[in-house]
Length: 130
Image (cartoon, rainbow, N blue to C red; front, side, top):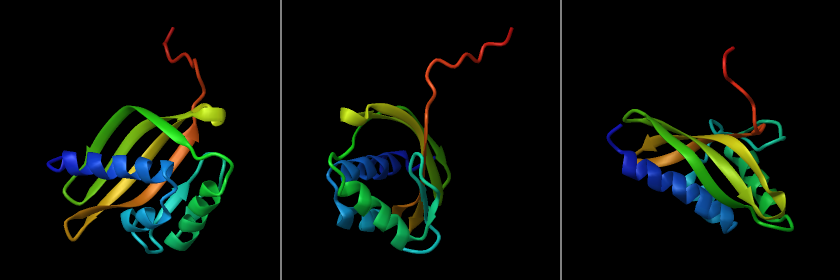
């Protein structure tokens, strides 16, 4: 992946915009078409920018904005598509951890988000083979 720094910036922007409830910034980061999708933890998958925007507006109108401490970040992709795997450690009263995948595509030299999926992590699973 030759554009790692720019993808890192786009991914960091997603979380900065999320934490600041910046819906206009989200609109600039996301592709504003029907191809986008988002699955918030515990929610059904939402398709299309109009519905994804509404989901963020609903989250932003809640009693407390999420704060993220990300970890286990891994970047993958090629010249046109990139995906970022990471763990979102949510701080505050909603203290929890989720595994997330953020998907970006390059349009006119800019990395824009097309997908986000987050699912709760189950702590202390044992994957050792006997």
